[in-house]
Image (cartoon, rainbow, N blue to C red; front, side):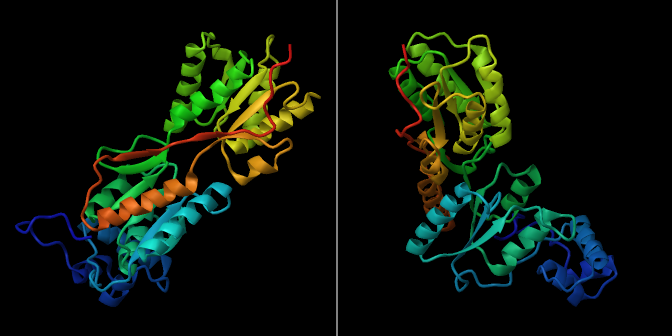
Amino acid sequence: MGRTASASAPAGPTLAVVAREAGVSVPTASKVVNGREDVAPETRRRVTEALDRLGYVRRPRFDAAKAPRLVDLVVHSLDSSWSGAVLHGVERAAHDAGLDVVVSAGLARSRSGCPERDWLDKLTARGSAGVLFNLAELTEPQYAWLAQHRIPFVMIDPAHEPPPGVVSVGAANWQGGVTATQHLLALGHERIAVIAGHRHTMCSSARIAGYRSALASAGVQHRPEYVRHAGFDEAAARGRMRELLDLPEPPTAVVVCSDRMARGVYDAVAERGLRIPDDISVVGFDDLPEARWASPPLTTVRQPISEMAATALRLLVRMMAGDRPESTRTELSTRLVERSSTARLRG
């Protein structure tokens, strides 16, 4: 976690210089650097601005060889089944590795207005040896902070292609799209729609590509009007399903790229007085607990979420020991879990 400057580079400003620049005492500047809460907001702002302006890099005061074996896990939120599965996988692998884990929900909670600085100061102050991220994405400044401080980190299911050299773990989304579509084709469906998540994200693009590939392999023409995006939002998915049902030739089956969105699809189908799977077959994606609770239980593509998280932790442990993985991208296989939401097309 040291500085990236070479031995011949000029030394950075001392904390005393920062304190003088901000017009505060050295102990007060130290409190800000170490993430203490007992500092007035205006004082914190002045010190933080001085830190940034002078290019001060906090030097950890702990002995890495004697510090607790601690890693950070940063998730987008803590109120979803997805996050629960990630936490389960990380906790299991961390226990096996003899590590403790600090969990944070996002990086945006900041008193100084500079989340990168606040969060990094707290990270180094508590002696974390590495970080796992399960966020939609990191910003360029966040990537820069991590690189500058030489903190090893691994991305779990990143939304966008990470910068070169960044290690990530995900699922075989393309194959999942193929498997879901092939299942419906085998049941006699050809008018198959797909409701994807966000446009231009890796998982959505890969799942749609797999869907199209399966159709092409079966000699079924792809219909652009059958492809919709709902941003992984349940209400939006309900709206997209209504649009599909309003088409002159509505689909008889739909691949929904998350179990959460599938709930919205179920609602839209019920609103029209239709039944699943009698009138339309539905395949989800993820295999979260909600898939089993749906009525009828949802056929879905299982993402090994806990296994992805555990794999990411094991990769991080290797990186903390100075070992770089051979590949920066690791993909775990997906598989179809058949339940009651799909049925053979009625003649």
